[in-house]
Image 1 (tube, one colour):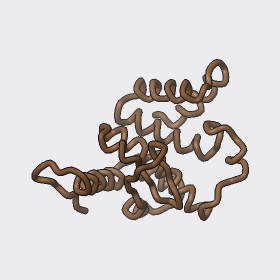
Image 2 (spheres, rainbow, N blue to C red):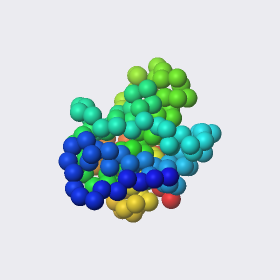
Image 3 (cartoon, rainbow, N blue to C red):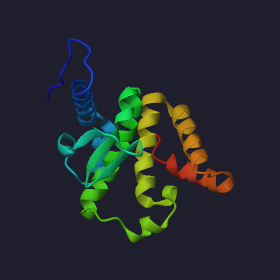
Image 4 (tube, rainbow, N blue to C red):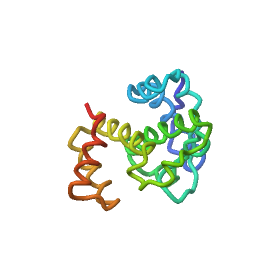
Length: 168
């Protein structure tokens, strides 16, 4: 394995390439990413080949045909935040491969945080957040997520418990 190392700060394309190299190295060595593959009966070599790129998109990150696309605005964010999105989208990339890119009718009819595919992806993203920044940080992230999506009261408590299931 290799990791590109820059001798001086560069902007633009070189900066993106350097960051993508760092993301790839982290992805290939991260225990949670490897577990996600193992849990889905996918060889960890998948992590070396899953496409990851930056683009100007209307959301922070998305996966299209198993290609992870990160918003270029994330380049300015701390690396652990970028990786949190990568872990989430990795789950979707595997889901796309398993379904040949077709989303379930069930997922199309449900609220965003009730979709099975999103719950699975957020559980792994939150697990990553907890591993890197601690359980308290993961709980704060979930609280913000639930607040953003207008889930409070008993429904919010139930969803928080569900999303935190993978936190060790």
